[in-house]
Length: 123
Image (cartoon, rainbow, N blue to C red):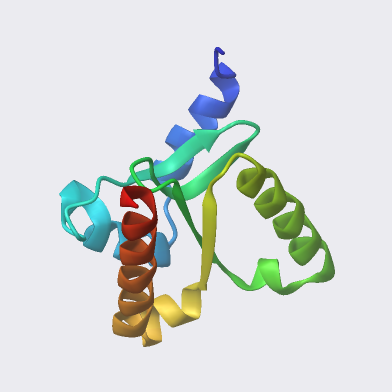
């Protein structure tokens, strides 16, 4: 299935204009720095663009700012998560604020989740 060129272009723009939280997490995940896992950022899973994606684990990481804490934001995120989970993906969300103030806790939570997903895929 061919991806929409506009969606791909928008993902490229989003990579260029990453939020501070996305930039921080990308520095920790990129180049297999985290558990030797390959992550992609602003990855297209049509019709969506996810913040970070690990194909090996089927893991989507979303970083959420305050706009996600509105009724509309929560409803959109719910539908989006439901769609991604229907594809067999695991979706995890972290608040931007937690990325900055509790970086080690976010990474530890992510480490535990990745270990669980690795164990599930190998059993």
